[in-house]
Length: 546
Image (cartoon, rainbow, N blue to C red; front, side, top):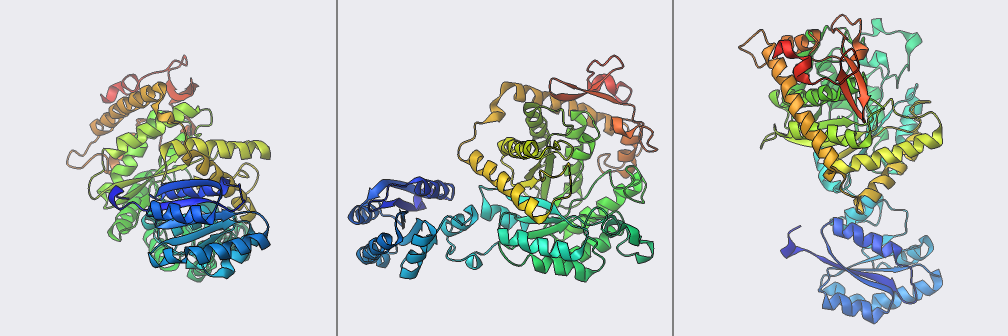
């Protein structure tokens, strides 16, 4: 907000009430929304509150009362009568208190917003940004990704996967999640046949129905799930891009669930990882076509690439390189808003500090591609393979991981539920996980230390960027077709895998990759090592390409 136009809110606890924690939380949100705040303190008289609003030229006077409803009703009626002249001058009024007192404040019909403690920070911010907060239905929840990111700032959008083995259970779960208002983006987890054989019912295996997610089998199924989300906070919806028939699926997703954004792999979801029918080079071509399809239509796009290397114990430098190649391909194929996904704890042995360094390096290198027509939005998530089985430990891990991720100030926070190591998340599991994540987000935004200033993180970040440039040089040098950009040439990218420039230990015995690279966790980093287990640089590892 422009300082010259900055609005002022004056707030305090009225009458004999001395409870000001809620008032201070409200003022903190007001500051985040761009307001100038004036805190009057506890036990403020009606006259003091009105005089302060006049002296400060306040646009908003917010009062709180958390004692007995009967006393509060009389006090608030007196306040409304005494402050009514301020309304004629354009001042707005907000009240916060316990549900019984708030109910009586609501009946007065005087306050522009009444908060009883059950509202989310989205509700409060919505009012502070100029929208009504009397009822959830009056909040205009933006229905495109970038608009919702901007509307909710400085809080990130919260996303979670959800898909149960039956349509009805999933539909009811979507309704419950939407009503909870804790989730901004429902990422539908669909079963394998929906990903691979949606348009080929003859290939579907009824025995595998619901394996890995919700068994959507028609466009109407998708519409039904989307319609289930039209309540509560009206969450956005998205789903997997599939493993074949990519363009047909993309158009259907637009038509049925108004897909918030797609996630397209670059080198995965094919024969190399056993999740699709295409060979490596062929799948790259198909994925690039889908990027162009969404790019032409103005959709944001995520390339879910780097974490697939991290989960297969590839060295950190290959994670960083694949993040850059993801952004590079998205820009090359017309995407204007790129969602950079950063999965922490992958591999699980990575330390918090070195995780931040790796992500910072991936972002810094990718951000070199930004220009007026290509913008990068940050998305973080907890590692799929990092959760302990014991539920209390898993809950602690979720909260700690989210707090760490907030150091990068993500625009989207992809919550991975604490039940991941045990079972697919139910609606109740997701609501619990999001409540934990939201608390970590709130704590971080209240004044998290700047962990990115750590000298060890800076040093590792610079090292990874330098090493990644060497890997990228090797990929460029390996190109056989000198007339094409090697970073978007499917043959060159496939060749980078087949020759081992991009490699991971888990790819051993893979027909498309050597899988000969060896890695170790060394001081919290994942490094390529020689046969003796000693760290080697990219110059040493890739000398035949340099």
